[in-house]
Amino acid sequence: MPDLKNIIRQLAKPDGETVALVCTVDAVDKTARTIDCTPVNEGAPLLGVNLQANQEADFGICVFPEVGSFVVVGFVADGAAGVVLLYDKIESAEIVIGDTSAVIDAEGCRIDTAKMSAHINREDIIFNGGELDGLVIIQKLTDKLNELKDTVNDFIGKYNAHTHVTTATVGTGPVGTISPTTSTATTAKAFNKSDYENTKIKQ
Image (tube, rainbow, N blue to C red; front, side, top):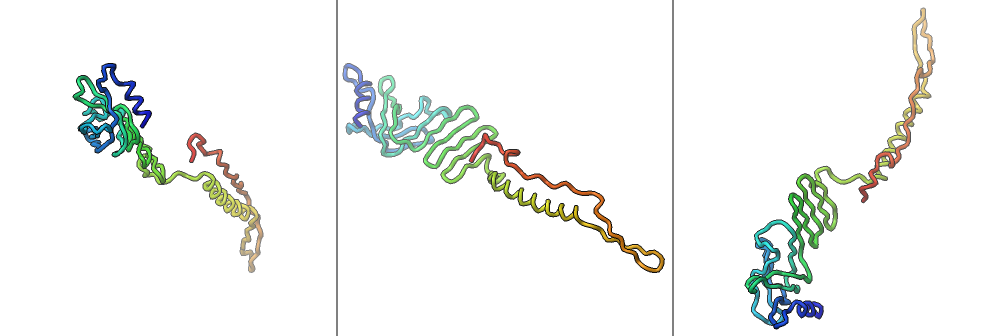
């Protein structure tokens, strides 16, 4: 509070006319982008104080203060219109630039563009709606692939060592012939996460 009072003193005109007031927030209207507040000097409540220069805009930067927190309200022209200049505690903040928007509040941060989105919440991060399920845990993927590689190489080893027993009929009796594998398979190489890891995106 002392800092806010010092700010008010600096903003005050030499003739003593009040150009700004410290107030407590009574209500927040996110649709109208205004607040109702009461000056701490017990003056009359201020209704419909603007949070943006253009009250009807749905773009730019807009900060929504918490109900019960302190704000500094400045006055435009003859004092008929009030605008929030400084905030104490905020409930959320919105930034809209063209097709890109960002909302930050106690739950996290949500960024949306024309074609992509990234929502960072308390428990997770969701890209583009999360329709492709979770990101791969790279080391667990590598371990699973190497388990598969070991199974395949075991099979290849047995195939390469296998011999065929053939049976042919010559005259009146069968003759058995043992024939080794005529061609061998090459064993699979170990998987290395550096072959497919994108190090610019980490979790």
